[in-house]
Length: 178
Image 1 (tube, rainbow, N blue to C red):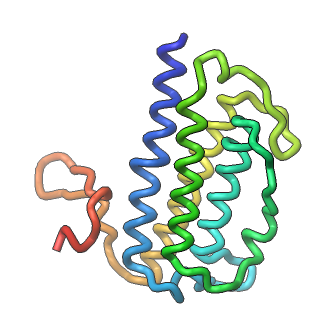
Image 2 (image 1 turned 180 degrees about the vertical axis):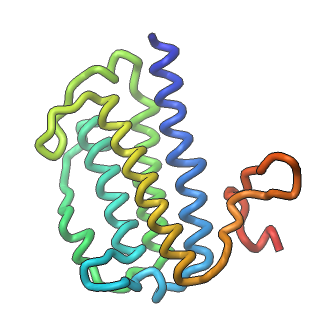
């Protein structure tokens, strides 16, 4: 089973760094600092809150939970934040967290996936923790895409449809497509 484990970890790392992060970066190119902190209502999250939350979740579950680094997360503060932290700083924080996550996942061996960790009061395997973070990141990436489309009323051009098969396009900046 080591091959399955290695493929699982490689795919998790690729989804976080090579699919979800570039899509978030594309959204951030289109948003202003004010847009990043816009919220539909008091019970809704802004893109800024989502970015803080995604970084907090990934660090808690992978860096701290799986990697056993100290857990200093204050989850509620991610949602309570109202300061206009710049989109540049928010993106830098997220990238730094994903770098830590990637290093943690790169250091795992196949037998580690079945080890148990206690994270947020749940006893989970390392495999479950990795799966949780990838799924969680995907869900909130989708929310950021939706908020960006709502605020900027346009196609994000994640795919190039000029040939028979759609071609991934999200790793390029919007400016490089013009």
